[in-house]
Image 1: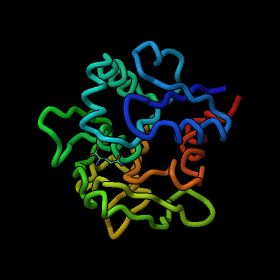
Image 2: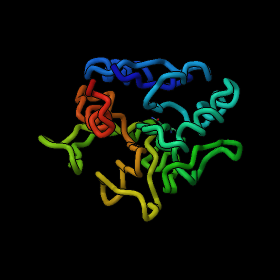
Image 3: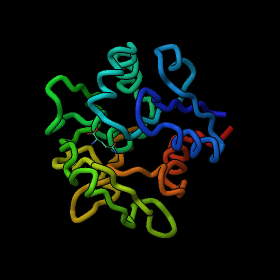
Length: 195
Ligand code: GLN
């Protein structure tokens, strides 16, 4: 069974782990550098990107995760996770760090504050079946997309699901809608459901 790490420093890690188990992968909570041993992929959950950035440094995880990502480890980032993967963060804290493996500029809270949270049905390129129910909570807005980035879904012309090589990043929370197809898409793209 393929081991997929779920960064569990802060934020919504449990629902991701449950989705991965339900699909037949083996989720591993990642809190220390040792937890990275043996994982084939990683999920960066939603939460507060400023806090997660700080905790990544305090736990000593920032550099080893950055190295694995640079080496091509598949990663799914959602909401704050997308911000952590981006190459440019707007409206961030000055000391906030990101892994810069997704060539986008992203504005924190670009969809508004907590009261502006919303749910909408998304047409996702490559996802068969019905529209995907997407939950947006203080979601970031992708304001610039680099050449190598595919936009797989948008809301009002704003990219909300992007892929660049082994990086898949959503501005929304696919783990909160009870629809496992996006996690399945991630796992299947990297053959994590085989053997
Ligand atoms: N606004 C948060 C941030 O900037 C992200 C919100 C979320 O992950 N639901 O990190």
